[in-house]
Length: 303
Image (cartoon, rainbow, N blue to C red; front, side):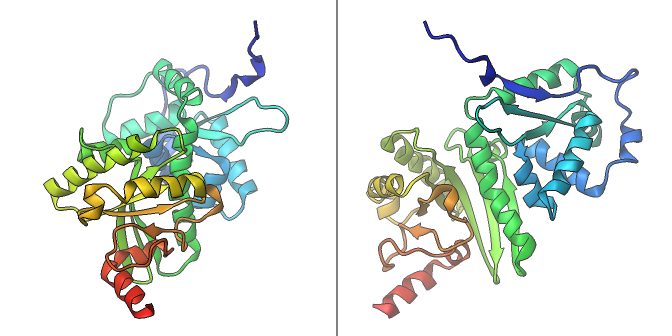
């Protein structure tokens, strides 16, 4: 019988005992910087980020981010965890600890969370089987937000989590995220399907039924973007997606990218499926998807 390696258990650094008399939010407000409050709100919405993701979102240097995060951890505002992997080490993952969660609850007028509930949430997140998927989805949006920090005229206008998307999609479809991106005066909205290659092709393609029903019911015209782990996965899935009635009939705008983490979502990595007259497999920037007619016209002119 194989005995599991005990080092595979995650290291978790979180508040073990609540402060006497409970969390003094008013006192913490005096020590929280505006950037801290912004980060707490993002973690409330998106659950977890790595050190590098937080640095890309709000800091100029990763070591500056690391120093601030460790301080917030010591004060019980943020918890951190990572798997015990050998050799090497894993980047810390950060989420709300008791003080941070209590601050969010007080701000929103919600009941204060119990220390036991926060500890349970952290433990579940640290051992979540789909944690890599969640971090991947967040990385997609972090890359866009970081690009906007250094690119004049670029802006991530919307960033919805899977949970928030459910309020719109209901039982029809469950996107991994929703975003709206503006660059060079062009704005595009999309639903994100972040694919790690674990689902069968027909299961992924069947999701288009829900998107078509949602768009028919609401009049939305968002793109459905498939961010795929490898070029091979993209090629295989595009063949199946292209035959879906909602795609062939032009009811859905669909584009794929298949380079995983080696590509940047704002760059010329998107291959539209549903642009009449467009060249097959043509790669365009995310912002270029804002004008479907222009994509088709430019390809027609080139031909």
